[in-house]
Length: 456
Image (cartoon, rainbow, N blue to C red; front, side, top):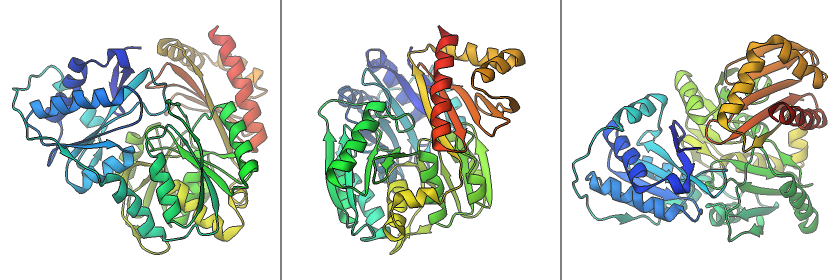
């Protein structure tokens, strides 16, 4: 799939992310969007990320911009540092997709770019920038420490008494996770550090990783295992048995723990949100849509996605101190807040069991060309007979359809089947909701099998 630019940034095969292509997008961003005091640059641990960082820095300096290189840093830590400095930012990451692909995420001094910024950047791609060499690059070594201090200042030693495994793999924030959870009082055990990049998708955790998590939990006597995706903006957490807690449940628990009244979340998040918050605003999938929804809300508003990424839209308070807003997807807060509650309430499993009885499961068929995914979903969408035949294979009967983002079918028995072509990878995603975890997993497995047959 050729490199594609959207609100989530520029993504494509590493071989196609050339200096000319990267430079053109960076300079279009600089021409079209506010950049404030300059440009902060950060990167994940993919082998290709340092070279792409060099392309970005060269393009920004050739536009006369002051550049600050933050090195290896999680996306929310980079965003926090840039926003505090009144600067724009670019993060080099392909998030959860394989290492042969990479990407760029763009931030104005106010946070993630919006759909309006996306249109402006695309319109500016054909423009030219007269070369003007900017000042020497500044090296920032404090972004990670400031990000850690954010949580320690709000939560103190709230995790004292918990024994927590940190699945490090190749996450750029792995050392940061070890640091922050140690400072929060937990007994921390590092697990699975890898010298090679592992594409961890927190929304569709690989079965082999699930088995490994359960093994580690039993072997080390852990209260939880925590991790993130490659760039540190999506959380992964298990309970004491090593069972993965899905991201939208982490979002529900975190938002309620902070006292939020309004939650903004995509249609793919489970419907338990409506039982947890006074107001729920549903959006299309993707943090830009969540942010847009949050901007229309008033009062104490949070945002979260089914992948667990969490956005705080107001000045909240932790157990010991203030927690300022952070309008970008974050992985650490939806790990810390539930664990702080679990330390006082009998563990994570009990905390999850007290949530509304709606359970989600998600996975995807990989290496499915985008045009094939779109054609299949459009065919089911437009033909009620084919849609009914699909649901019959799932032992379901349709009572409602939501087309906010993809095709979301509600069945008579309360299950929900949601089909959506990925916007940034050759994948067809399936989201399932049911009244029990077992029913959700069974429907997911059956649905993927049926879809695989339809595609082949």
